[in-house]
Length: 358
Ligand code: PMP
Image 1 (tube, helix red, strand yellow):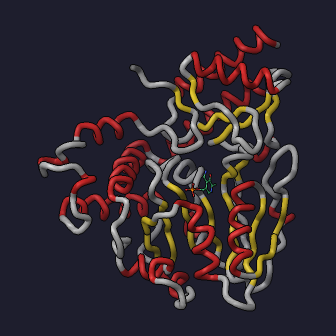
Image 2 (cartoon, rainbow, N blue to C red):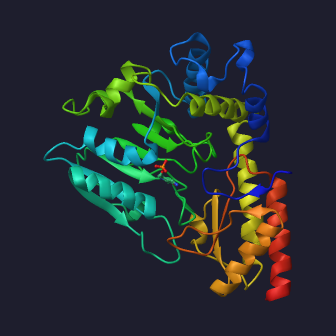
């Protein structure tokens, strides 16, 4: 069976050469006589992969040794809780930008722990959008500020990183390494791997060590960032296979170059947005200046036509185009590894579908 064009929002398409390399090494990793899934996380083969994965991330993010790269479990969702548990003390306030479902999910967890100021709220706005810098109201001496750089469900992306006046934390689950960015502006960033970094099962965190040191020490060991820094993400058994896949994927990103991927990502997204804008049949759901290069969201005139579009696209080998269950519509997720040919196929299908049903 040939590979389909997989528009899934995550877990998402991986580079074919990464999958093939993993396949070639699956039952006998580099002559060790066993797979990466079967070897000790304290052994030398795994250690080399673990070390390289962290080094690749650090290099691709442009971070120096003031930062630690961590591989944690519990997805980006556990980070929603660990961040306030570590950094939001009694009597302190944390600023959150609430611009979509994921920002709101982060806010919900922080509120369980402490005092949250919503720096700006455009979560319910239609068309979906990100806030302008001028709308954001930051607290003086906030414990930290939190943004979501790409709202995966809304199909919106923050183009400029705001100056918040407090340690900045970014959820970059759905656009990490998809564009050049000054990551040194952040005290911490995090991302579930399952979009641009590899398979699910691991969340990657990059955190400034001096910021981590300020964390609450009255927490269970597993929930402290300092534990994972001191133990090099090996305090307990890490998700070895996911980290191995992240290692291969980051090797591929290094080979491609983030600048080149960004250029290609912009071109891929623009092709679909152009198709939307050229028609009155399709309607983009995000405000133009905040349109995401990663998740392209649009509607058709009726829900019946949307269901037919998804069905016929699937029959034509274009899978997982259904919008998130909370909002409906169509969502084409086109992360780094999504091929240009798949975008061209979708655009041709959109034109044909409109001709037949418009
Ligand atoms: N943040 C963003 C921006 C996301 O897109 C997602 C998942 N789609 C999450 C957080 C939650 O990630 P996880 O499933 O790894 O907990």
